[in-house]
Amino acid sequence: MAKVRIKNLTKKFGEVRAADNFSLDIDEGEFVALVGPSGCGKTTTLRCIAGFIDPDDGEIILNDRVISSKKFVLPPEQRNMAMVFQSYAVWPHKTVYKNISFGLELRKLPKSEVRDRVMRSLELTKLKGLENRYPNELSGGQQQRVALARGLVVEPDVLLLDEPLSNLDAILREEMRFDLREIQQKLKITSIYVTHDQTEAMVIADRIVVMNQGRIDQIGSAEDIYHSSKSRFVASFVGTTNLLKGMVQRKDESFVEVRTEKGMVLRVKKGEGNEFPDIDSDVLISVRPESIEIEPSRIEKAHNLYKGKVVQKTFLGSFYDYRIKVEKEVLRVQTSSHKHLEVDAEVWMYIDPGLCNYLKA
Ligand code: ATP
Image 1 (cartoon, rainbow, N blue to C red):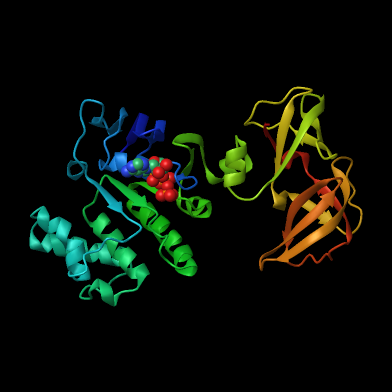
Image 2 (cartoon, rainbow, N blue to C red; image 1 turned 180 degrees about the vertical axis):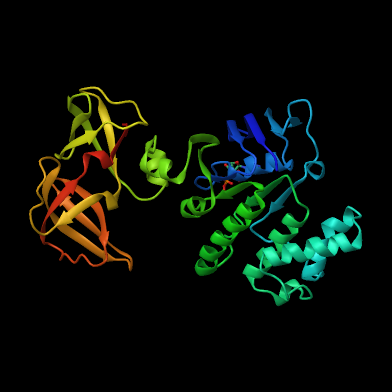
């Protein structure tokens, strides 16, 4: 197990700052996911940690040892880290067993130890019984498990994973997320996982690092970044949200009242994350679609109760996705898939002031 400390990491490609003053401390045994849109610098950051790319600036410290700085860069093979790639990168002419044992054979470990460790990895990755097959006799999911077993068998200090599930079909991908999490928790191996898929990050990671243009926008648990997003970027990247632009027209100790540009008046409870906005300041209110209640008849609430109209309805299996027009705003509302409301129907809508999150406009 290892602690990883990244201090002010910067990597430029011409004018592009792929990693821009990136700092992060990762605890022993922690599973961290780097998420963000394509091109935000996830892979570059991971490759700097692995030692495949030399950073322009900053330090990477493994336990108490500086493994990368302006003056010195430790080669990847001396870092005791393992990397799993999206493309599996298994050797086509070696059996599953040989793919996994190769790293141990290079280290000249006794044959019996190699065998024990390979068998343990096979068991952990649910590959037992397939050890004599060649990669072209395996499914994509099984090949990815071989890549994972090959990484785990060397007992690395840090496991690095770069979009390892992206080539798998949706069902397998969902299943593998839980398997990966389970394996990581069993082994307590410090792991850094790159993905552009926020749901994947939520399933897998203890902490999620949301990246935007080489920088960190927010770090937190899945709940933190979803319910207490600090910026417009995070609020809209992590899940779906309604963003209502407006101005604070009243304020007391616990609430602000915001008039949106499109005519809604919304009471918003003071939260913990962002600075409580002042009167007359412009704000952006984020309201998650599942935090909004809609009913065909009046709801008994003193505030944030609106009369609206259903303008669109989409059935998505586990929920309905409605678009409801209130004043000139159109809000997305997600309800149980048993709540039937017809398009054009009038509805009552309630937004809990405690479930609104204010952001800087
Ligand atoms: P994706 O999810 O698409 O893989 P990413 O978040 O992993 O994206 P990176 O691959 O780290 O992003 O790229 C970050 C930025 O650096 C991008 O603008 C990319 O075009 C640029 N970049 C990455 N590698 C190189 C390179 N070898 N030469 C030039 N530019 C590069």
